[in-house]
Image 1 (spheres, rainbow, N blue to C red):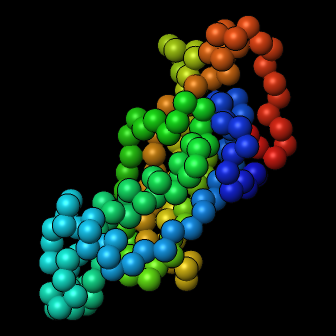
Image 2: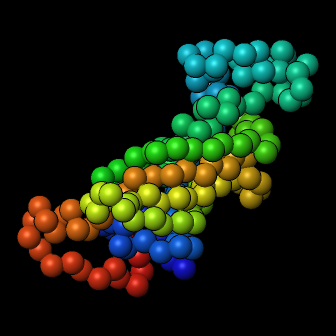
Length: 172
């Protein structure tokens, strides 16, 4: 199992293995970010107003799940997407087991759970990853299972006429 904070070079399909992990940097979330996102994309009282949020199911201001999903994507991509060609989604399942609150410091731990080379398109495959977004107390605030389209090194070889390189033992 490989753990990397950022891939040195983008990962092709052949570079990945089941159990391989990528851990993101961190992002501190505050009231202003929560309210600004909610004003634009999810204007519900428990995302916008401390007093209204105190009287809600949440008992205080909480981030929109869609805000957490957006932050998760930003943390996964980081300064450079870990997968060759970018993080290209082919489907996703999301759950939010607990609310995200002002002051939470988020990070994402992504694990490869399945790799399926395409039978009809040899230049790519589908990689399924599970990404858990956690706060500073190691409480999971979001679980995202994604199917990603990841290019095969075959496509790169064909376009560059190069021999394949072996994946290094520390990951891509």
